[in-house]
Length: 248
Image (cartoon, rainbow, N blue to C red; front, side, top):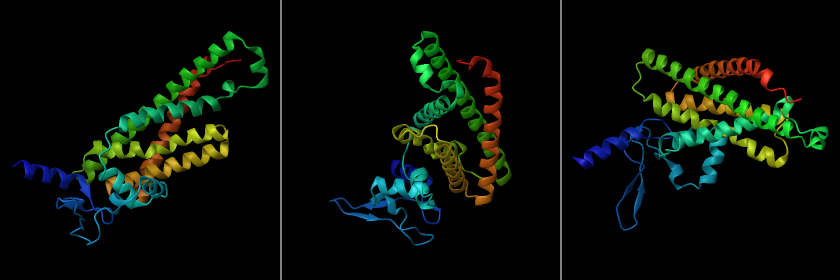
């Protein structure tokens, strides 16, 4: 009974990275160190070739938006730290907004002041930017959850919305690009920020495309709605917080 249960769980969790159909297992272990990679019973190809690949190669393929790499990461790996990643993305986004807010720039005149009030204002503006980022994240989650529930009702899909949300949250890895931006001194470069936003947008689109098995134009429309709502929520929040963000 325990063996049948484990097989059922595996069948629900794994998919063939080539055709997207359910797979019972990724490989067969014959003991004595003998392992045989499983083949998909639908398309005949290897279920998941990435189990033999180096993580660096997988990361590069995911960055190139290869559908197979996305299926490997989102379906065939057991990632349980998605909320930790979400918090990390939140802080990265907060820092990006903070350094690009006009009142938060460290100009030469500001550095010469060495004034306690100025640095207290900088700290206060960081907290406010965290609030803006939190509103943006909550909007992202709520709108995405609402759209997915409507999609599940219309399509009568049996997919677990929670798993889809986990996958889309992980697709926000582009927010970590703020780290090399800080190292290279490009954290306030409009070109760098624009490219980062485009990368995040396309990553979200690919994640929904893979997780929901919908056409690319549908996932593109969904992500456009989510990001547009995010943008409006951020603008409204910033307008409300402008009186508190004046560090002059």
